[in-house]
Amino acid sequence: MPLVSTRQLLDEAAKGGYGVGAFNVNDMEQIQAIMEAAKETNSPVIIQASRGARAFAQDNYLYHLMLAAAELYPQIPLAMHLDHGNSFETCESAIKLGFTSVMMDGSLKPDGKTPATFEENVAVTKKVVDYAHERGISVEGEIGVLGGIEDGHGAGGSGLDHVTDPDQAVEFAELTGVDSLAIAIGTSHGAYKFTKKPDGSVLKMDLLIAIHKRLPNTHLVMHGSSSVPKDLQDIINQYGGKLKETWGVPVEEIQLGIKNGVRKVNVDTDNRLAITGAIRKVLWETPEKFDPRDYMKPARAAMQKVVALRMTQFGQAGHASDYTAISIADMAKGYKNGTLVTKPLVAAK
Ligand SMILES: [Zn+2]
Image (tube, rainbow, N blue to C red; front, top):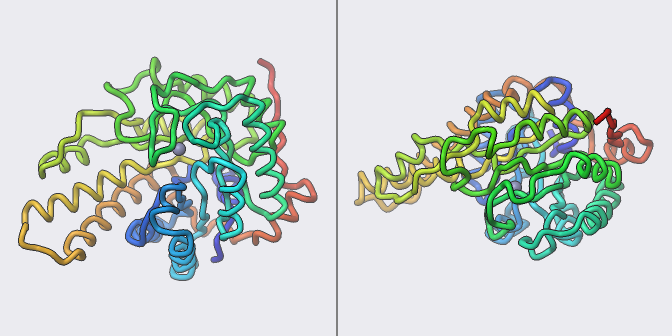
């Protein structure tokens, strides 16, 4: 199957009532781990790359690895997504390269750190939506500001500093026409999300539910949604690591989100933990080894295990063969003739 639009994957997920994991990659082994997990669980999947990943791997390597994945797994609907685009130019370059969807994170100024005004966010996101939809590419926006920093991107601080206002979310969706919307409900990027198991005081699921009621036709996106499981932290620390105790977003909370309009769930940290733990274990137990394959193979297998588990928990498992790809050219036609335009339905407050 050619690379498909994220919009198609999310529309199908909404029909089927499940969520789709969006897993970050920087290299070949991570792409291989995700595709094997998708094959193992028969899952559609979104693979995403941040600006940091594009700088690390170089665009052409990343793009051709993604094409290889699409060739090798023709049965898997696969979208290639830009995570946290910081400007129109970043999104434009990703689209020109061949990404099938982009995130324009206009919640921050182009420095990727300073919160932007609502007006600035609307203006840059709308510009990206116009450019992208004309080319059949879907767009994720962000309203409210996530906590933490990852890959040099983020406002830092707590996830509760700038949670999404439901009225603004509705207005933003109407003004920009985004296909999907990342909302800030208390989650943060990185491994250190919560200092205790999160409850309603730090993770605002009630806010998510309120936003979905008012925007039932806009796919919601949960960022910073690694669960940071204790067993993965323990493996790292058992073999010489020094992670501080931390909590991520419990899978049950993500599943509650999926019941309430969340269609894309971003996971990065859990995979980083799995890879690092597996590599540490090999190097600790067999310090005489020096062939990178001796630790990259278990690292890849450890990531595959985490991804396959998340695919099952998010509900996307078993859905790879539900549909055939809509070409990007046909997506462009759909946006043009209005059949794909998101129409926010404003329910009573
Ligand atoms: Zn994010």
